[in-house]
Length: 428
Image (cartoon, rainbow, N blue to C red; front, top):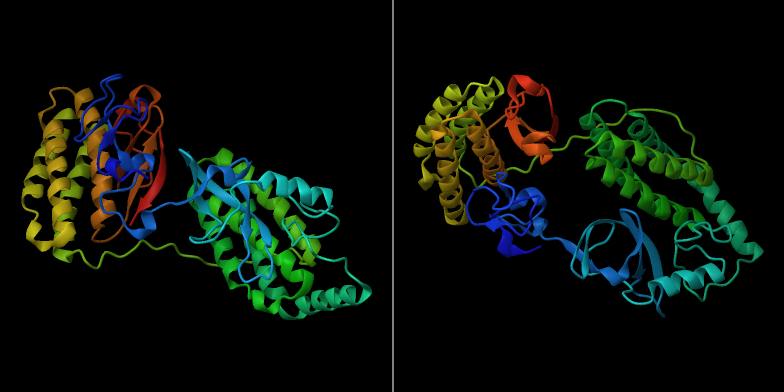
C-alpha cells in the first residue's frame, strides 16, 4: 500500500532493512529482494494495482475469509446484506480485500457483530447460523421482513420449477466445472486452471432468469463458489488445494441439494492471457530478449556448479544490455527503463566479478528479482518462461529464479539438490 516502498529492496526475514539499491541484509547477510516480491506496489503502478480496503472493524473473520454487512442501495429504509469476502493481509487499521467487494460499496464498520447476533435471535440467517429458520445462507435480511403466507409459498414453488426449465443447463455447467476443480489431481497449474474454468462457468449463468427464493439461493452460492474459484486460481501449495477442495465440495453439495442440480460431469475451457504491452516497442523487446537469454545461460551455469561459465554469461548479458536502445521507449517507460537497467547492470557486474560460486549465487538471486520486475513492466517478445522457487535456498529463507523449461534446475544448490524447487508462475 505504501508508494514510498515502490522499487526498493527489502529483507524478507528482517523487514526493517530497506534499501534503495540491491545489497545484502545488515542483520542476516542474506541478499535482499525487490519489495514487489512481498506485495508492495511497483514503480509502474496502475489502477489495477491499487488495493481495495475496508476498515478492520468491518470484518467478522472466518479464517482467510470474512463476513461484512453491505448496505443495499435504493431501499426505502436501511437494509443490509451479509456477504462473504476473501481477505488479504491486514495493513494497519485496514484489511486488503482480494475478492467479493467493489469500490464505493458501503459496509457496516461498527456494530457488525451486534447485527449478526440479532439475526440469530430472530432465527434468520447469520454468520453463525447460515441456514437460519430454513432460509438461504445469505445473511442480513431486512429486519422488517414478514412471514410468508400460503400464496407466497406457491409463488416460490413456481419459480423453482421454472428454474429447471430455464437455467438448469447453466447451473449444471457450474456443477461440472466445480467437480473438475475439486477432483483435479495434477500439477498446481492444472488445479488453478480448473478453478479458472469454474470462474468462467459462474459468469455464464444468467441470473435475470432466476426468481423468487431460487434467486436468493443462487446469489448465495454464486458468492461462495466465486470465492472458492478466486482462491483456487491463486493456490500456491497442495495443502491449501486439499483444504479448498473440502470447502468447495461442501458448497457444491449444498447448492445441488437446494437447487436440485444433478452432478453430471463435462469439461469447459478457460484461457488466462497476459496483458499486452502495446506501448512497448517490439524492437525494444527483441533487444531485451537477448539480455534474458544471457541470464538463462547464467542460471544454467550455476545449476551445473560452473562459476566460470556464469561469469562469462554475465559478461555477455552486460554487452547485450548496453545495446538496448532506450530511445525506443518514451515517457514514463523511458524513465523506468533508465532506473531498472541501472540495477540490472550493477547486479550483472556482481555476478561477472564474483570470485567464487556462492557470492555469484547471492548476486544471481537479486538479479532474478530485478529481471522479474523488468519482465513485469516491459513484457516478453514471445513465448513463455517459468518462475521457480526453492524454499531451502539461503538457510531456508528461499529464493526465486527464472528458467525456460518446466523441469527444475536449481541454480542455488547445483548438483547437490538440482531438482529442489517448484514452478510458481508462468511468465508470458
